[in-house]
Structure formats: C-alpha cells, structure tokens
Image 1 (cartoon, each protein chain N blue to C red):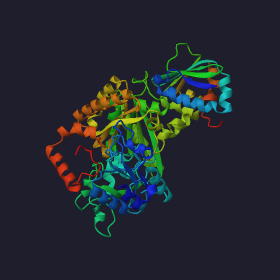
Image 2: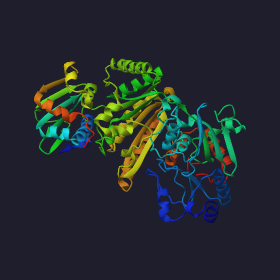
Image 3: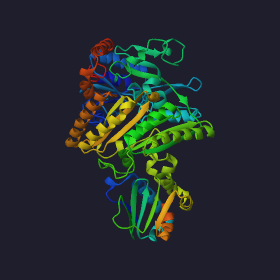
Image 4: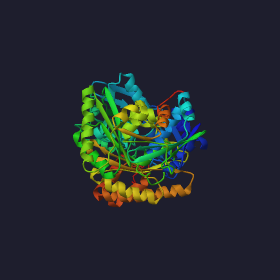
Length: 121
Length: 474
C-alpha cells in the first residue's frame, strides 16, 4: 500500500501534510489494517483548502480537487482539523461543532486509525 | 608561495592539486567559477600573520573561506589566488556566562556553538542563521547576516563586541573595548567604532581571526507557532502590529512554495493552489513561567484578531509540535540551526538570491512586484520576509534553486536576479552580503562621498590590493 499525490506541483499544503501523515500511518500495522478496509473517496476541507483521498486496494491517491462525489466529507477550520489528525480524535471536535462530517459515517470511523499519527513500523 | 606554506603549515595543510582545489572553485550560486592556485588550512593567528606578510611581499591575493556556502561568490578567489581555509581554526576561546559574551575563531560553526552552550548548562543562547549547521558564525556576522533572534537584536554584525584582525601588512589589531589591556570584550563603546572597518567589507580590508560577540538569555519555555495567512497585506499588517507590541522573540515570513518544498515538492508550480495560504509566519515566543507564555499567546491572538477584523483571513496559530506529529518533514523548522535541504541538496546544486534589507512599509509592494518577476520567468516565488531589530527594518529575500549544469537555468537566474535587484533598489531596499555583480549595479547610485571614503579606506588598509580582490567593486 502506497500514498501517491496526483500532480504534486499543484497540490495544496493540506494535501502535502496529509501525505506525510498517511505514509507514517501506513508504516504501522494499525494504519495498514485500516487502509485495507477503505474504498472510495473521502474529502477533507480545511479552511479554504480541500483534498480528496481516494482509497483502492493498493494505493491512496491524494487530489487537490475530486471530480467524483465523495462517500464522506470532513469540513472545518484548519486548526481543529489538524488537531484532530494530530491525535485529538474526531468525536470531541464534532460534538463541539468545530468539525462537521457528512456522508458515510462508518467509513469515517474506519478512517480514524489511519489518520492518527503512528511512528512505528 | 607553496614552499613557504608547506614549511609553515606542513604538506598536509596545503592543497595544490586540481582535484583537491575543485571544491574551492565555486559556491552555491551562479557566480563564475575561478581556480585558486593554493588552499592553506590555518590553525593559529600567528600563521595567518606570517602568511599575510609573505603574500604581501609576493603580491598574492588572499581570500578567506570557511564552509563555502556563500550565495554571492564572496569566498571565490581570483584566478591563481590563495584561499585561506579557516575550518580548522575553530576554537571557542571563551564563554562568559555572567557578562554574556563569547570569543570564537572563524571556523566555529553554528552547531558547535550550540553544543558548547548546551554543555555549559544552557543558560545562554545566540541566534542562528538559516544557513546549514556547519557554517561559520563569524562569517555571517561580518557579512551582516540575519538570525532567528534578529527581530530583537538586529543582524548578527550588531552583536559584535570586538574583533581581532590581521591587517594587510601582518599587524594584529583589536577593535572594541578589549583593545584596552585587561578589559573584556563587553562592547564596542567607547572607543571609535573601528569594527566597522571589517563589517560588510567581505574580507577586503583584513582577515578576522577572533570575534567577541554578545550572547542572550535562554528562557525556560520556548514555543514556535505557525500562522498561515492569505494576502501580503494581512501578513505584514500583522507583522507590523506584532513588532510594536514587543513580546515576540522572532517573526519570520515564508511564502507558500517554501513549505511545499519542505514537504517534498521539488519545483512547485509558480502559482499557488486554489484556496491555499500564501504566507506562513513563524512566531517564536519565550518565557520563564507558564503564565508569561500564556499571556504572550493571548497577545498574539489579540493582534491577529485586530487584523482579522479588517477582513483579512488569518488561521489560528499552529504549534510546530503538532505539525510534526502530522508530518515529520516539517522538522527542519522545529529547531535552529537547521539544514534546509530542499534549498541546498536538491540535485541541481544551485542556490541563489536577491536578499535585501529595507523598510517594512514597502513589503507588500516588493512582494507583489517580486512575485510577478519570478512567475514571469516560470519560477515559484520563494520569498523570505521578516522584521529586524524591533521592526526598524526588515529582510525581503527572493530565493531561486537551479541546476548549475544547465546554462539555460543559470542564465535565467542571472536575469531574474538583475530584475529583482532593480525592483528592490527602486523601492528602497539594499542588497546585503552584496555580490560583486550587484555592487556594480548599485555603484552609480551610491553617494560619491561614501564611495570615495570606501576607496580611501581600502587603499589605506590594503595598499597592495591583496585582500579578497574583486569584491565590492573596489
């Protein structure tokens, strides 16, 4: 399983940050297991930037804009979103209204272990 | 000259073979390579004095050099010249913890000084430039370079409290308070400020063999926060307001391509992605008690709120520790000194810039104009813009990486730099660490009296013209 940025020269800062996070996560068994269960697109909108993560059997592709309708959306200001992916968890920010989610919630729950920092191989 | 050097220093400390001399032909930038005939590694002041006397006798040009990371060709010798390599003259001679100063030799690196202060208990610190950890503190100071404490204390030349210099006839001279016997190098006053004869002169007036400089207290709590902004106006209005509140240790601004390059994009597209922040400000805060840090963060938010109320979008400050958890590639910005490999180790080998000092009031205009120039040439606008010395002036620097093996890219960098220099000069910015090509362009605009004074000083201190000839257009 690998992470690929589609058109990296045009990718936004959020997408490039996410690439590092996903690569770290996939270095651990928890992240790899989570990625194996995911298929389809999830879009993250951080402030005025958006990035779409497309999950398939052998790779995760990051795009600055997705043409397809994603299965799930996560939206919020940059700081609460980054705090969430830095290990703060999804539930608290959602309950406080700092992060909004839409679409397939089960997919988002499956995504959570993948977007938590992991440094272990 | 070779026999003299070998007798004085030993065969192993003198280079004269083509392969060994090759790294000394050039530096990072597009300046034309030039072959020295000899490189000598010195370790003592006495050796430097003897070499200078012999070189004066034989009229051999001398160029001082340490890491060779200059981006203006200042440490490239004239063809056939002698390069004095100071990397092995690298002792920290003294650190005074009470009076807060250090005395170092030219080869002392940023990394070495940091480790030295840490080993002494970490009560003192200094600012670090954005150059790699193995670069010389003394060279940056003599060239008036900036550091990550320049908002509070100015460019690094302003911290110099005394110099020991070998003059062109081999005389050893001290400037600053320690010129008087048994007095410590606490500062430059009250003697005439002769240190200035060697600052900003690119080694054309003498060879500095020791530098005394001021150190600063290391506080218990340090926080580096990143503030993402979307317009030059919002960015630098925030900077101007922050500097007047006087609670930040440092503020630096980096344009959007810098962050992307650090995150692995070798050559970002010249235009930013849709919705992307265009500038990142890093704000350094320090404190000795937690309440002080909390208050400073509150003050930061207060200033940012005041700019947001004027319809400027500014993200909430992001702690570097949190960003590191998300992406370890941000680590070069976690701690200084740092190796920004995306600039220095990108494959093509070339790094150049037009780095200027000038008024904060003109930052937005300069950034808009500089961005247009770089984009027109197909370059992503890598810009460093930051306040210096309480905000009385600032740095506006445009950076290019390029493939040194490509004549097309080298020509493009020269063309871009010429345009950037003209634009910056017109706006009231002055290029620092001034390369010879830039000095020639600036010369017609420099006050004739100042130019005469510079020539007279040069003639007085270096009558035979052996000290790093060809620099500063003198």
